[in-house]
Length: 268
Image (cartoon, rainbow, N blue to C red; front, side, top):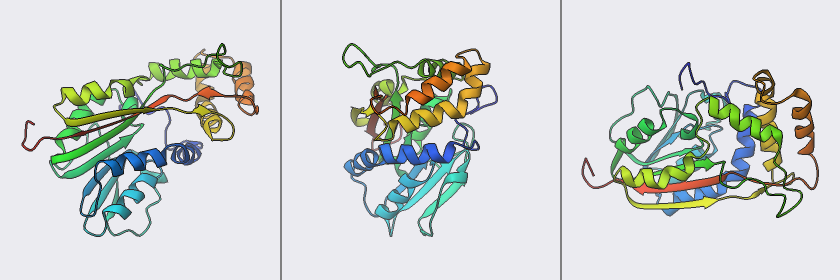
């Protein structure tokens, strides 16, 4: 992050902890499957970038114990609940500016981090360089543009004005709302091998927590959306109330999970 492009969903804000709990409930299970699929085992040394609430880091630490270790970093780690696991270390770290040990990690993972960082391509390259030979990198990021609601398919799929306002606000702040869709090609361009990509989406509704995620995001940045002229306060309140309806649904962003492996020697 930088002064021109601050993190728009700041961990210091009141809604951050709730958002992290919702994200964990929605996405931790498929994240765990993806990390297990690359061969995660005892003895691996892992880096979790943008640890959020710490649920993925804790899961990793349990699975690489006792010989392995996990370094969990975040620009603001206040919400990372780190139990007394001897192989888990939490550090405040700016992935754009701060150095990383090179090369040391068997596995590097980040979820919903790089799309927020204008320097995302340079950061991705640095992360690849921080891998040990034959190490794995798994990046998960949204494509929020390719699957919009379509009321012609189902009348309850509504494109909320608040959703459009949120996308415009994020775009102005340097977010790449389609970054997840580009990851496969970027991994190949960086010389990674055994590259795989999987896109996953679900229908956000009141029961699975998707509507709650939309609500907490709208509430966290709502005043800024109104102040920027992206939406009126009345329309914002109407859209937030709409999320409580039993019949409200909308396709989630596509969560792209992309894995790749570094070659045996420096330079790939």
